[in-house]
Amino acid sequence: MAKVMILMGSVSDWESMRETAQVLATLGIPYEAHVASAHRTPERVRRLVTEGEAQGVQVFVAAAGMAAHLAGFVAAHTTKPVIGVPLPGGVADGLDALLSTAQMPGGIPVAAVAVGKAGARNAAWLAAQILALQDAQLAQKIVQERQANAAKIAEADGQLTLGN
Image (tube, rainbow, N blue to C red; front, side, top):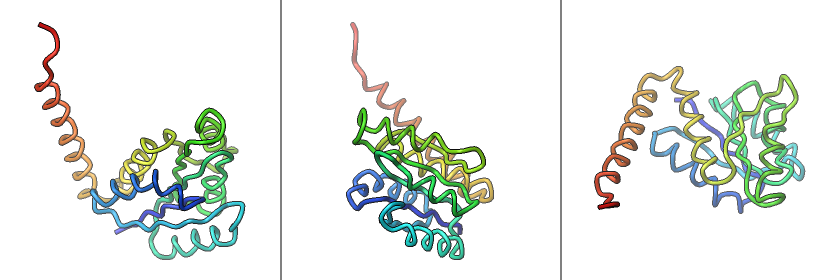
């Protein structure tokens, strides 16, 4: 089965990116996670991307705050899909990271998700949907997870006692 590689600029980013790992694990998608910085360890990032591709990584998830160059740096070194997770901190608690992630030059795309933990979860879901294009069993797992989520919402609604 195809893998996902999670890259983050700092070990403190794991607080958010653990959400990505948990969703991937729930769906049975193999992943690996690494700390590597576009600015401080560019050769390490380049090597991880190259080795990851050779080992079956099909989607990269890159998380960074403030200047948030990691996702773009990864995208410059692969033609596999790259999902950028902007992390909170910096200007307006992550707005700078969101803009840095979303504003890539033409021809080097990075998919940008929400800032922080919600974005980290959505990065895993988006990676799963990309992989499910070639994996019918994974596609079915995604459908089942969505149905289970809808059932939880319906149950919560049934337990709500507002009004008269």
